[in-house]
Amino acid sequence: MKHSDVNIPEKVIAFGEHALDVSNQELDCAPYSNEYYELCFEYTRTLPEVCSFYRQRFEQAGIDPSTITNRDAFEAIPPMSSGEVSALTDSTLLPDATRECLKTGFFNMPVQKKLWRKFTTSGSSGLRPKVSYYTRDDWEVLVTTGARMLASHIPFYKISRALNCFNGGHVGAKFQEDIFSTLGVSVEGVHISRTTPEAVLEQLAISGAKELGGFNTLIIPPGLPKGMQGASKGTNLDSLLEIDVDNIIGKNIRVILTSGTPREAPGLNLRQRVWEANELAGQERTQFFEMYGFSESLPNAMDCEMNDGLHLAPGPTFTEVLDENTGKHVKSGEKGFVAITGLRNGSRFLRYLVGDEAVYVDEPCKCGKTSPRLKNIERVKEIERLQQGCGGGL
Ligand SMILES: [Zn+2]
Image (tube, rainbow, N blue to C red; front, side, top):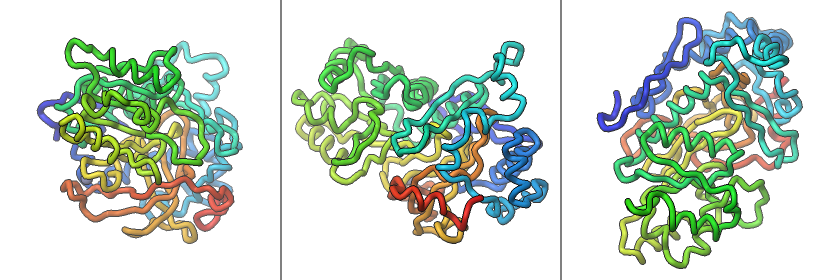
């Protein structure tokens, strides 16, 4: 099913006999399907064949990959901790053949197999930066998935021109630009010279095809809660609201998409502050959306207009929420560690504990969709919990 007013190009993730068309908007409306689980199991079974890291890892754990045909077998694979991934070299998680090409270049490879994007984390958690490569095919899959999620959740007919405030080197800059452009929104990045909130606010006021109404959409990090340290992902919404004395945001911005850190962090009150600005300007309330993902694998989930938890999105990132002590998937309403499996051809992440915990909810949302949601997503501050987490990694 597709919304008749938006054209998202078809794109398929395929491993072995199994495939998933990630442009299908029905994926955003329902829990993970059996077909999606089958694709994930097939991907996992092939890992030891293509990547010597997983060959050793499965041998060490005494796992025969051919037995991974159901959830119990999949859930018996020890998760990878954040510290474990941090200790790897840049290329360890790549398939062996891809690592060979990395030595000399990908000149003879079909363009879909060439490495297209490489991202690293900031290392602000105190661990060595984690590295993630995407092939061009992987990138097209995740862009199509992201555009589909926007089409499923955002009233896109309200928006047409977006200012993207993510720093150019951050995964959010390239990813958000590509997914909004694929949806059909014109995206402008913050100019390289505009490094202060004042300068970004000026760009918001004067650019974005002003003769046609200017920007009506912001793509922006929300801001860090007071007292929390972290690398700047770009000028954030909190700092723009502090200085917006002309109420440019309240007057003009109809949709705000945040990503990078939780929008509802204590003390930020972003929605309330913007809605007060809307009221002052005599405008309807700006709608908020949040996308959840990491440079290691994205996109995972996004909230709908109800702002009541982020809907899990089937696609290149298979997401689980695992009980800290048993390693089993938590039940609805319970909190656990977020683990992701990235279904792709570049860096291979399998049941990787990203360093967040969240409450998993599988009751239907007020929006009518029955895809499970993540609520109260938080960084796990005590790294040793993750190292020992989920019934003991390798
Ligand atoms: Zn919803």
